[in-house]
Image (cartoon, rainbow, N blue to C red):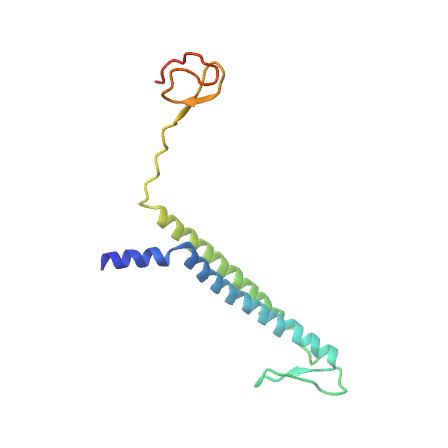
Length: 148
């Protein structure tokens, strides 16, 4: 059971799965912005252009009234649009903080890889790279003191 949980944790916290989940959430929030923009600005603008078209609240269809042009009947609801934008920014900030915390938790417990010892060094005479254990430079053929 412990191995199963470890495998599930590895799968669920993999970069691909987390990125996809965040993409879906951000996409839904952005969809709300587009819907608010359409309902708040574009539909009333169409109403102004078409001569008083209104949106039927039951069906959601645009109803065009022939021959009438009234600016007073068309309402631009910018508050709903601003609310959708603010909600999007809040969701994005929360997801950013959540992802940052998950990434930090994933690095806890992992030991930092020790830096590997160098395999080469520079010849003190010609400054070319030579193996660390070399006693003679292959480039300038000088006798090189042993590495410490």
